[in-house]
Length: 358
Ligand code: IPM
Ligand code: MG
Image 1 (tube, rainbow, N blue to C red):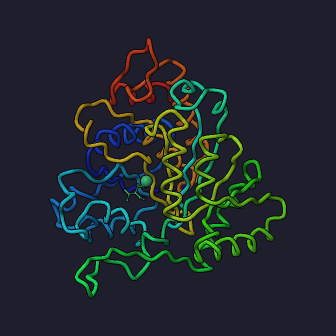
Image 2: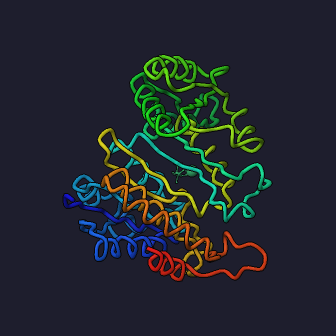
């Protein structure tokens, strides 16, 4: 195994607590299962603003460029909400995504059968659910120029953003989706708003063009409003969903809830060469920070994705995922996924149980 450099960015809120458990898992793999990696620590988000004056400081930027993969907790919290926009923690996250050109955001929504009762949908609608959302992460309203808040001639202020997608950006994310579909059920559903938006009209045209290179994969299109409805009506109809940055942000939270808890879902944000940033899709949850009750499984599963996609260690990734399954089978639940009659365990106890199951 080549030596790997992993940058760990605990972040804010529950970030440090859940990252500590994922780090325990990586350390265990290092000591007992042959993982050859060095862990390095850095600052991103609110704590980075407090200590270094920027949500994505130059020191972190250098560490991030040197690393093979990055594991992130979560950023943000009420303490930093009223800062000037460039200093807000979320800006740090957007900056690292843009700076490292992490354009392909993979958000699997898998229902662990043990958690069917925790879903907000009826168990039969979600049993066996396995969706992969492929969200474009470097374009769209998130980064389009011009943007801002301007004062009109009559003195009224207007906020504005630009939704823009280039052919090359659509082409490369579509290819990620089709390649992923080839390893799954070979079905891609592209989500847009082509009945209203030019950016979506081009999106659809380019996705159609890319599809010609994947005749073995079935392509369908949905408008985003319909896609949102279908996700809560009959989510199992989907295999791979590919969409732009904003629609993907919204639909992935929605898909997360189908699986019982947003505390279960990992994500990967990849560049064109397999370098990636891995983070749970839930946020920093300031309301429960410091209480030791946050669910570390999404972060532990993000570490598994890191092992698979950036370190090319599928066997170690599977070992972690199997351990998480075992722990759920044993009936261990953090408070976000408990069912009636179950006692919740804390963040550390959950992490310890995963280590024991490794
Ligand atoms: C996500 C989050 C981020 C986003 C925020 C924190 C900037 O919601 O990763 O889904 O909107 O991309
Ligand atoms: Mg989001």
